[in-house]
Image 1 (spheres, rainbow, N blue to C red):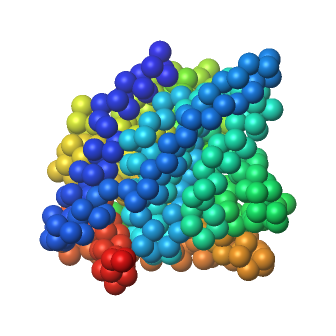
Image 2 (image 1 turned 90 degrees about the vertical axis):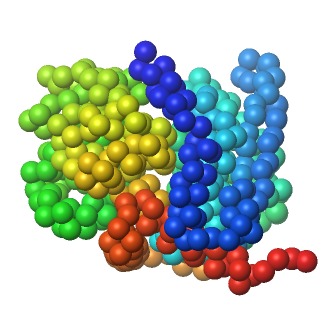
Length: 424
């Protein structure tokens, strides 16, 4: 039931239509001309691949995968690869567009890309997963590369998956190319701080927003929807800051305890039982219910379309930081803004991941690696600078932070597009 409810919620709004609606709103405020709108509103390139994979029992199964490059005017395309049974081309297009704006809002020299394979990786053996990954990598090798398009981990993909992609691409080239992907294991060119990067960036932006709102972090109640990599690490980092983690969820359901949950123990319970449900004496709640519990800070860290016009009026948090991509529909945005709920948008809040991916890429190209403290310092500088710029623009234009972030990002991409001109 829990998984089904997520699918139904996600289906409420086509993610590509949502991404374009967000772009249109910012483009209107920027008074962007029709030519630039036409260029920036659509992806540059969409690749659909259908490829056979031999399963462990000898049968052949054909998988469908995608790789979309939305815009490369500011640099190579950058974006994750997700393995999920519900991946669609429209979802990948939306995620690629969001990546363009995300890279621009934190001012790193990347464009936006995204990929995905329709599958349930939990149903595949390790050997099947490797064969599928290597074949998919071979199919998209025609457009990826360290100077053209650089994949990274996303939903249900890991550093090991990135290692297989790097090795496959390198075999085709005849030499090792660590910069073709980011999010790799440290032993083959990964960066310190990459696993914690998204959650660290979320914390950095929340700290600044909380200071603006005069909301003390110590004792603040935090609810987190999604207890994967970003959500679980965010729970640990916020707990270390003195916050009270009152609710978390995964694909099986959610748990709530007004007195607070111990993130380390919840994670251990999930590792032992496959879900957070059933932890201690915590009250069981639905996945959607985690969004509506009494709290000060809400962190959606699951999938798209979670905050909608239906549940936005029920949200009790004063501050929302989007660790997931596209969790809030445009209709919910308007409701939350009118209610005075501050939303730190995904293209800002969760940009820590792509920022450290950029650091990893730079280190790979130089073949020179930084200490964890240097990565952390540089990440904090990027996130605080980006938050300050977005917050100032939101104040000056009297708009919500998402519109401000989009205006800042689209303005930067539009400027690059105009300066480069058209070829031929």
